[in-house]
Image 1 (tube, rainbow, N blue to C red):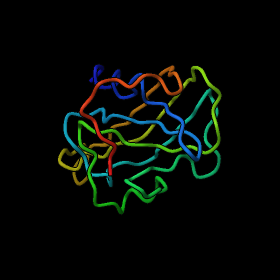
Image 2 (spheres, rainbow, N blue to C red; image 1 turned 90 degrees about the horizontal axis):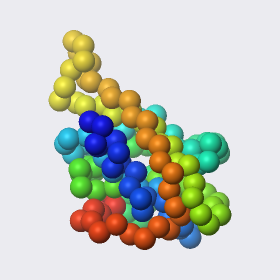
Image 3 (cartoon, rainbow, N blue to C red; image 1 turned 45 degrees about the vertical axis):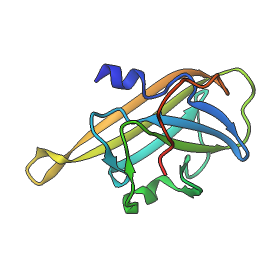
Length: 141
């Protein structure tokens, strides 16, 4: 599982967007998961949490608040990256990025009647608009 955590925030994960910035997160799990399995999504940049409401999740052309993922029917495929959108601009250079979330694994039980819930804490020092890493990944849509 350590390898999956190391590659969840790749070198090119932090980019400028028209409305602020985006962080692309690879799924740190062995199988594709429904978007509805994501809970407690948090994003910090340089030690500062995002303002009220936290990051928005970009699904295709839609911006969805993290709490609304429980109603989404889409999937986070293992080869794709979940796009987290933050408001405001970031200065050029490197930034400390932290992403936390829980992933409910619906096909594994942790206790009778309850699914396994895995907490993930990802940290990386990322360069804003670093050169893209060659990949087959797409953004979750």
